[in-house]
Length: 422
RNA sequence: AGGAGCGUAGCUCAAAGGUAGAGCACUGGGUUGUGGUCCCAGUUGCUGCGGGUUCGAUUCCCGUCGCUCCUCCCA
Image 1: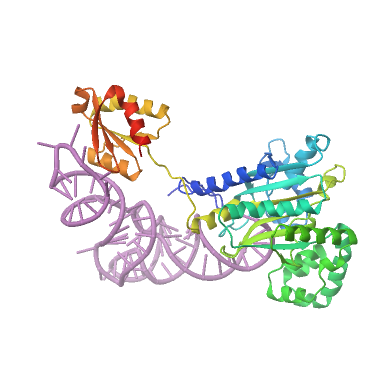
Image 2: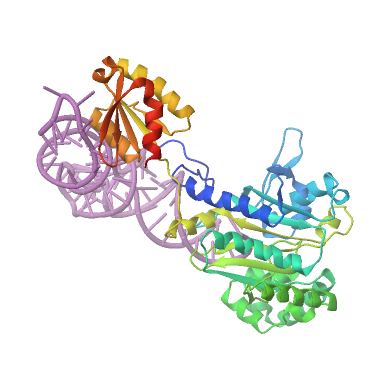
C-alpha cells in the first residue's frame, strides 16, 4: 500500500459511522434540552488566540499545536480545543450586549500533535458546552449534569466523576507559594519534568503520574484549604447542588487540569473501561478568560468530551441499537431489457421513500436473492422476460417466500401494501 | 521524544531454514429464473519494503516504512 492517512489522522469509515451518529444525535438532542444553542467556529485561529487563551506554559501550547505560517506570513494554529475560539467569537459578535447568559454547544474536530495511542489521535473530535455570563454555582452543577446526562443516555453507567476547586488567581498564588515551600526540600526526589515545573508551573506537579512525585504530593498542602471565603462558598454550593441532583462525585485534590484558564470548579468524567487515556469529559469554570481576551470581567463555565473515546466504549457495549444499511426492496432483473425497465421502477420506489437496490454486479438470480437477503430486503421484486412479456412483475415476500404476480401498473401500490402488512 | 509488540489471502489468524495453509467471505454447481441451512468444486498471496547470512529465507540478522500499545499529559 502506497498511501496512508497521516499518522494520528484517522478515517471514520461507514462501519464506524453508526456509533458516531449515535453520539452526535445524542449531543444534538440533549444540548437544546438544557438550553444550549450550537456555535461553529473556524477550525483554525491566529496562534495567539490559543497561546494566550490556553496559556503559554501548558503542554498543549508548548508542544502539541499544529502551527504554520499562512501565505500572508501570519502564524495560524489548528484548534487544539474550542473554548478559546468560542470566547473570541462571543466577544467578536458582542453577545454580551445581546443576551445576559450565552449558552452554546459545539461539535467538531480538534488537533493536537502527540504520539497517538488508544483513545488519542492527532485529529480528534469533541463535543462541548460553554455558558458565558453567570457565576452561579448551580450553573456549574448544570454543566456537570449535562455532561453526564449525555453519557448515561448513551448507555454508559460505569463512569466516575472527579471534582475539585482551584479557586481564584489570588488563592492559587497563595497556595502555590505554600506548595513550592513544601516541595523544595524534596526537589531532588521529583522527576525531571517536575523539577522544571517547580519553577514554571508548580500546579502541574499535582497531576504528575510519577510514583515518587505523587507520593510526595500526597502529604502536601491541598488547594481547597487555601480558598478565599467566596471561592469556598461557591464550591460548597456546587457540591450541594450536585447532591441535590443525585450526582455522585469523588473529591480529587490533585485535579488541576492542563489548561491555564480554569478557576474555581474543575471536573473530569472518566471510565475505567478505557486504556491509559480514560478521561471522557473534562471541564470547569473559567471566570477570567473573557477579560483576558479584552472583554469585561465575565464568569463562564464549560466542558468538552471526546467522541473517539465514547465510540470506543459504545463499540464494547452490548445493546446499543445501530442502524445499518437495510433495504426495503430489492429489484432483481435478468437481462438488459428488464434492467432498463427495472431502473425506472427503482426510481419510482425511491421517490416514494423506499430503500431500494438493483443489481450492478451482473449477479445470477440466485446471487441477487442472496444479496437481497444479506441486506435485509423485505421484498424482492423479480422482473424477468416472462413477467415483462405479460406486463407483470413477481413480488417475493422475503420472510415467507410467498410470491405473487402483479400487473406492472400496480407495482408501487402492491409493494407498498406488502411492506405495510409486515 | 523514549520503551515494547506486530506487519502472511478481502477479513480473522496458522505454519516453518526446503513447493505458503485454515476458517470466514466471494464465485460456480447441486436447483435451465429463486435467498437463508446443507453438500461439492473453484478463485485469491512481490509473506510491508530494502539489504545481508545461506545451496536455499516467508522463517535468522541489519536497516527502513507502517500500525498498535505503553511512559508523559490529556478529550
